Length: 178
Image (tube, rainbow, N blue to C red; front, side, top):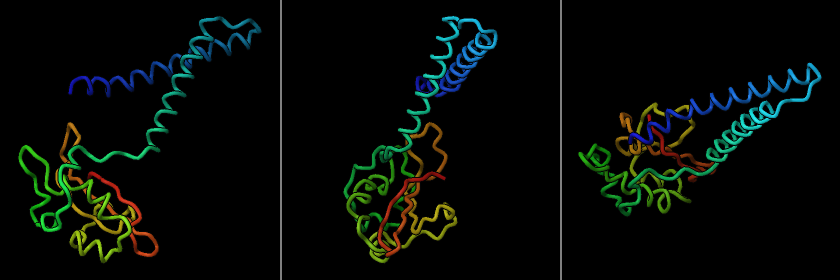
């Protein structure tokens, strides 16, 4: 846990250092140009390292945002069981474990959701929760999965959000935390 925390804290420091290098090198290059002198090798190197580092970070961030996110840990531990999913206690906290719904999540998104209509989904999964959570996202159906997973500060709940297309069939899903 500590190495990950140190890594997260090092990101802003690294970005600030790259930004400072880019500015320092850029100012040095500009001053050389303004005084019509040849630019120094160190200013060129600072500018190059800073700009390439910042561009690499921006590119990596952009690529990571476009890749599909994997399901949270433990989502494929159990096959879908309609009776267990519909049990009112299936999303309640289980000490030292994850909820039955969280264990079935991979099977639900891979085999239960695709191609189904709202009526079919509500027949299989039960009625959607009547809640204002994530209403602004435009989601059509919402199900509580249990406590948030894969977080060092797990204080939120995990939700399955489902969108339907214009024909009322499953379009996409998202796992969200409130």
